[in-house]
Image (cartoon, rainbow, N blue to C red):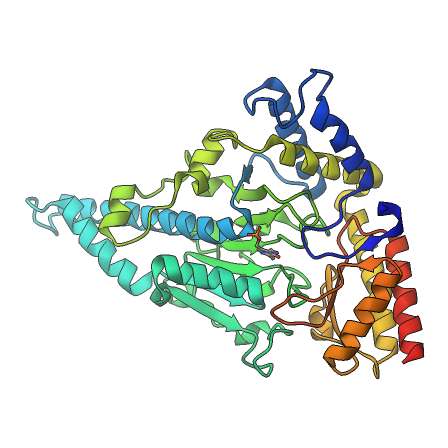
Length: 446
Ligand code: PMP
């Protein structure tokens, strides 16, 4: 039975038992309608309330300024957003450049510096073609397998020539992920103030699920300065928080976009949550038209990933899996309830405590265990380590011993091997204590 098992899977991951129990009821009969939650219309008042409740809980947990940020629910997983961020930020970049070029050329005509007979639109397109060729860059901080995948998707969509790998943390680490090189070594496209064109976005993965590498905080060099508001020179930071979503306080205002698949800390697989600055969406922002993008050789994204369309339709452009939103909403409301005014800070403290217990046990027996990532970037969520000097036999034996104690889901990602204990919000202190006991017993018996 469920009560005998402590599950440390990396995603899908454990969910609070009380939410699952409630879920089994609402699947049969939602709100006493005699109809299950998967059967109700996504356009019903019940569904709208479910959406509103989930958003409200997230707003409370992250202290989101709702006049500045929009919350979207989409399908397509975290991977879908790898593509959506590219489509969106490229379109935003093009529309901005188009507005600047149009204005400058009109002024030139009015000033008599350009022939009044010129076709401004045609000149704008010629200029945009040059600018796309010379200046369209997307910065990626590659610190693990998921940011690498995201950068590869960007290269597939717009061409590798537009993707700037500002850092690849494998380079200074024997070809393996596990460190985040210091910010001075990052080669982010220079901002305008520094004489560069600026980049269309700076992408990072806040927590690398496979490699156990987490950013300790928001990178200093990507902070905006007060004067950025005037010359619009701040980097647009896009963060994948799929595997550390709602696990610590963040300053949402530092990010242009935050996204995360639900299936680790928030709910079941099926929805992705996007928090996007309203100034990057219509009606505040203009987006490039599909015709212009095509003319410039840039991709036009599918409508189901189009944030302006999703935003305009309150995430109900097409059929949203409302059950998935309900689960996420219940999980988040549970956090709000247990931590009261401390909100997500309370959960952050627990996550840190639990992670410290596991890392403490691992560090105590260096002859038996080796934590994979560098001390400075150890993930609180995915604790990756090796056993017995990476011996396949020892690791198999370790996993078998764990299973016998009901400790499951500990196998590392197939691409890197080893052991991975995922310490998401729903992993209880009791589960962590059982794991720590096993780590000690195994080490002492080795
Ligand atoms: N980003 C991160 C950090 C992830 O851990 C994962 C999946 N484990 C993804 C993106 C991809 O998510 P999905 O499988 O939902 O496409």
